[in-house]
Amino acid sequence: MRSDELGQEKLSNQSCFIDSDIFLELELDQKRAFECEKFLDKVRKSLIKATTTCFHVDSILLIMENYGKEPSELRTFLFSLLGYKGLKILSLSLLDRILATKYMKKLGLNLDDAIAYCVMKKLHINRIVSYDKHFDSLTDITRLEPSQF
Image 1 (tube, rainbow, N blue to C red):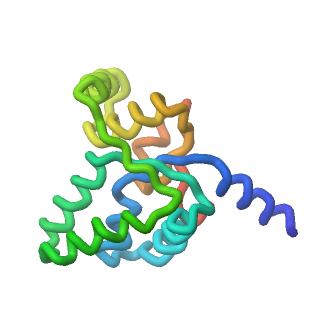
Image 2: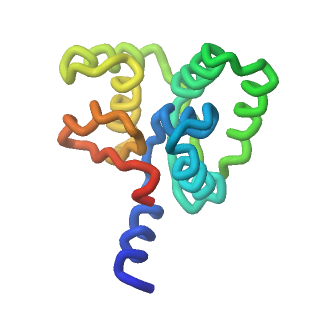
């Protein structure tokens, strides 16, 4: 095993939060869909442990709908999530949402980024897989892109 492969293995063994843009790249067949598919396949096979929230899943569905996706395509996406052995989808409490609004103010985040950050703090996750560079300003978490796995 080469040393860079060992580093990749270490990344895979740690838990991470998956931002909605990673799923959207694939579902909307955008320019980085292939690298997202490779990453998500590792989550599907439980080679990578990951978390997202029902809020993020709902935002994915709303964006897919806004892009003209049919209800059957939304349903297919939802069914696909059932096959991700390494993915936990967390339901949010009202208190989680209230705390997220504090992070919005304190850290200058929008609601979905603040919810992701709130959940990460709650679960002691310090890595987010996202293309959203807003996360780069947060010193206590690391933003990674799918190609880094």
